[in-house]
Length: 219
Image 1 (tube, rainbow, N blue to C red):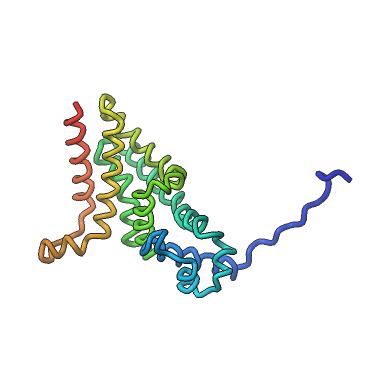
Image 2 (cartoon, helix red, strand yellow):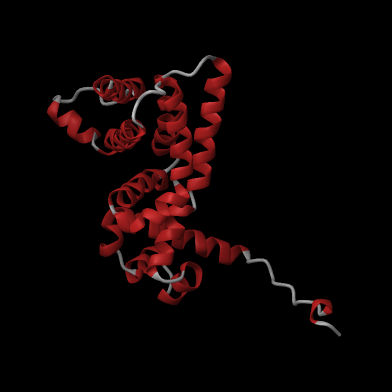
């Protein structure tokens, strides 16, 4: 009998218990990596937070670097799709503007961070770790760059004569402003003596104004 005719043994689907254990491990990894970064996190601490043995962390997540990749990647597709859907809705409603493009990129994550549970807020801090460390350029290239490039391309259609590096810089600065909006509200309250720190429109206005100022200086 030829090898291709040999029936391969069927792999059993993971049990409900196994899936729940894996989800706990990934949630714990997200929390620990977000709080301590890659260097400060340990498999032991992730196992302790998940309430499992260290061996189970390795079983479901692999080594520390592989687990970090899996933790970053697991929410990336869902977030990317929400952003693309928002952009498509904006396109269908009216001609795109810088404000509507940025709003389509920023609002989906802000809404998730504020209403989707603590995991989505931790995810933003995790993304920040990836964004500032060139060692994770491959993760950024796979998980985030395709969507970022899509939005930069849309912005470039509004400013076809502007250096692409200017627009890419504006995109990166806008992500930083978005994360500051979510994580530094306490600081704004302290400096304003209890002022209102809400306001998505103000955030988008800030990012749009910054990019427009950069565009003017490039011309």
